[in-house]
Image (cartoon, rainbow, N blue to C red):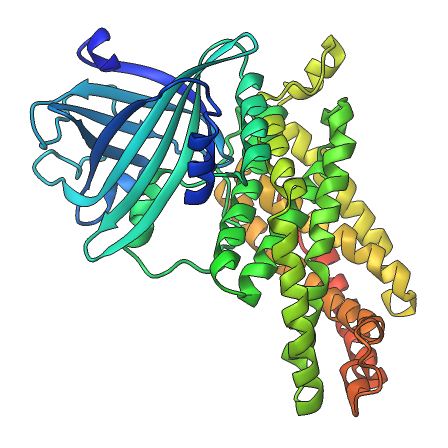
Length: 493
């Protein structure tokens, strides 16, 4: 075991890319001898520990004791990754039995998580196939795990491949990931084995909304962007996973939201990048988001109609639209995009000269304040005389308002004083009110085109989905929401 060659207790940083495979995909890799040579095969049993109140999980820690043959190794990890590629701290030590040992002062475990209070919460059983692979200038340890996660009376299959850089450039990890993806469908994994176990302990996961990404005032702009982009990518993948077993309207909506947030983040932070890959990935994100558009529009129309004939026809159209979404998600193009994004976010080689480097390392808060000021002025100016704007101008205002709200949510943690936190909450509420009204107006404007596209314009009473009376009221409500927005104090000032 590698741990024997280290000190009794070792701390290290690992960088890895993790991919989810199907069991048939894993079999294909093995049959084709993709990694060339016979693998080392290990049977592993990992027992994960926590307190009854999940104190370790709440602190972002996991603790396991892994048994392989007669040897046991305890591992504590912190900071599980959020974009499939991640760097995190890890502490390993050999142990004599299945009793955790917490005597390393470097491991900041919560006070309640004493060895006496820790108990097994779930287990992971895998058959691991391991190779050492040379990829360009890098040496990569490849581990293909096939098995299951078991928590109480529930279990879930596990089939994933981990590519861990030992030496050389981290770009080699992604080069190898792309090769695997061409042989068999491989999706960027965003759940650690620990997270999979904790998920089994609770209700079945559904739609995943965006959560606050921890940012600190001492971060530079590049680091803040990477954290935010990784969180968006994670949100998308979790909702994509939810859609793989259920055509849930909320999960589809949140998958689309995550892509919109990521596209907005790209736009907001465009000045940080001088990279030929930037435009390509932004265009690919636009493509993938557009593949979800029809399904989302149909879901909105279904929620608004009480007409049985129209509802029935819309349900048929919904089935076709969700089939198209599933085809897009399973395509090589979409899977490759996720690998490209994970690499681009992780490695951060966006600029090569000194001037560009200065932009990347500028304080995140200074960068955020400039962005927020610029977007606020655009929304304030664009919403003047809102009731007199045409549909196209209102659409542009809606896009600007969306970017401002996302920027306020992204960068809110950088403004942590009590007063600014209160202002932030009020500002987000004002933005939500404006966005809701502009969104309803957009639904009204796009409904006729969508009905025509679906060949449903002739269905009786279909025009009730977009009546002029509704539009007049929504325009007045939107104008009031814009006034409220303008009068709300800006939290970043």
